[in-house]
Length: 199
Image (cartoon, rainbow, N blue to C red; front, side, top):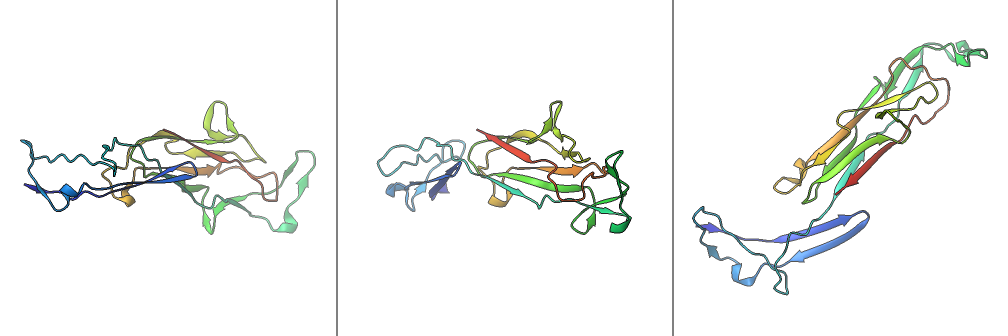
């Protein structure tokens, strides 16, 4: 014999529109003890306040979070040692890439998705100025290319049956070419990460 107490609270988020849907538990079930069928399962039909059965409305909510997508190139030379070559349009610099204070050319989990929907969601990551041959590679910008690493497209399963913190998730890393030498000495945008979501 199984005891069942059912409460349904669904919050729908589609694009920027929030819709709240509530379903009440029939008073005949409140605190009731229900017998299971041969398999031991108890089937409860939840109805709305007008007596209509809930038919499994799909509710979508996907969160997108991202790290500070800033790379810094630190030159080996002092400022007064950096010279411009007008014949090659390059500076005489060498150096290394950093993210914050860490020497690295990669930002792990740069853009992350979590599916809190009760339905699966198909996702995709790409660069706005991606090479035609690969959405993972950006066009060369100011002597620098970037790459998306990890799974750039797929499907996130429904979050039904999972804890909020364990929602189906996906992430992509962003890295710049470790050997790239910038041809500009000021800030510039290498590329923009585009996230697509379809249901």
